Structure formats: structure tokens, C-alpha cells
Image 1: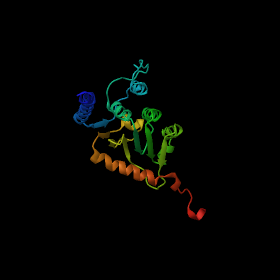
Image 2 (image 1 turned 180 degrees about the horizontal axis):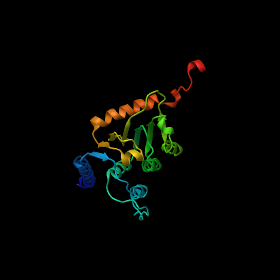
Image 3 (image 1 turned 90 degrees about the horizontal axis):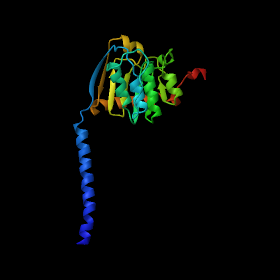
Length: 217
């Protein structure tokens, strides 16, 4: 009798644990996967509150003195999705010169997110490119050494969210160009982009770079 009673607390705890796990699975299933389309140009807006919140989620950021308007817009939504990364971020970008997006990527790196960047060799050397700052921060960057452009424009957040479209990550494109971004959590579409990133990452391994022809060796 005593032995049977002693087992009851253990059975109750096991049942509660199973119930908690079931509830977690149910909540996860009920959360609608992200599916969003953003169109640009996006009006200039203050992003300091978003960046400050990402640095210290528990602190209330003070007012920013800049004159830019606050509020929701295509760019702020893109930034918010990017800052949602918790484990990994793969970037495959032709041009990357937006200071705000550059700050966000460096912030994620400092927060412990594994960041990898693939970019175009010619455009990463242009004035205003964020690539040098990313490398200086310790972020892994690889680039092409081909005659054609590395013209992809996509990002993968935590290996489950795809951000892709016509938009170059430049202030000019964000504020002035007619562009689009598709954001989705759908494994059927995310997986091919992951595979493409890993394929290019391997091809652009710096150990395989050949800056001089065999004739010049």
C-alpha cells in the first residue's frame, strides 16, 4: 500500500510533464507560419527603437532625437523579421550597404547568432559597403571569383524562414526603387535555398581561390 502511494507523486509529475509538452506542441501548431509580402520603396523611418529592443529586450528604449517618423513600414517589418534570428542567419546578397541592416546583422552576431555571408566580389568593394564592417566584427564572409555576378538576394533565418525578392540591401533600393520581398516559413521552399547557400559556400571556400593563373606561377 505504501509503495503504491509512493509511486503516485512520480506518476502525477510525469502526467503533468506530458500535458505541458502536448500544450507546447499544440501552441506551436496553432501559430500561423510567417507568410508576408513587402513592397518598396519604403519611406525613411527611425529604426532605433527596434535595434535598441534587440540589444536589451527587457529595457524600455528612450526617445530617439532624430527627426525621422516612427511607425510600421516595409523596411521596419523586414528589420523585425531579420532581428528574430536566434540561432543562425545565412545571407546571400549581391549588394549590402544599408547601415541599419548592417547594424542589425552585427548585433545578431554579438548576441551569439551564427552569421554567414556570401556576396559579390566587385560590389563588396564599393564605397559604403557593409561587408568590411561585418568582417571586422568577426563574421564569416565569402565571395565569388567568377566573371559573372553573384546576383542572389536572399536570407535564411534560423534555417526555417526565407527572405527573398528583388531588393538589394542598399539605402537607395530601400527608399527609392520599386522592389519586392517575400518572407515565408515553408520548408518546401526554404530547403532549396539552404541547399543553394551551402553549395555556394563550399564553392567560395577561400582555400579554393585562384588569384593567379597557372601560367603565372
